[in-house]
Image (cartoon, rainbow, N blue to C red; front, side):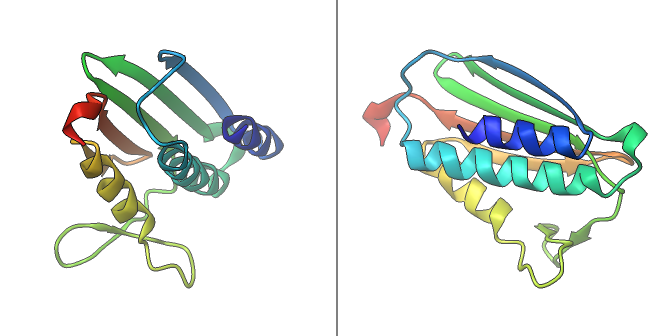
Length: 138
């Protein structure tokens, strides 16, 4: 349902949105955690892509299982403007936002024995979240 919502928003904003999902039907991950992860990643991606000229708007979402890990990656076009704090963590570029979304993604990933990484190049913002699927650890 969440994915359909963001696909519709992307379509309204004329964003080329491509999805690749190869995961089992059942995952040992709380529904709320997956919803927070996907919601935050896709909201950021749609918002950022909407800010650039229509011809360059794109989002690529991949969700695949690799061994005992779930990998979620989102690559989206953006205007190249980033803000970082003194420790190099990304901050929100939206007015009156504190930029806690990426931090919460990292915290969720760490709860599952994984992690999150964010980077960018001139025109693309890259998000990568890994979650452990071995429930015995958590």
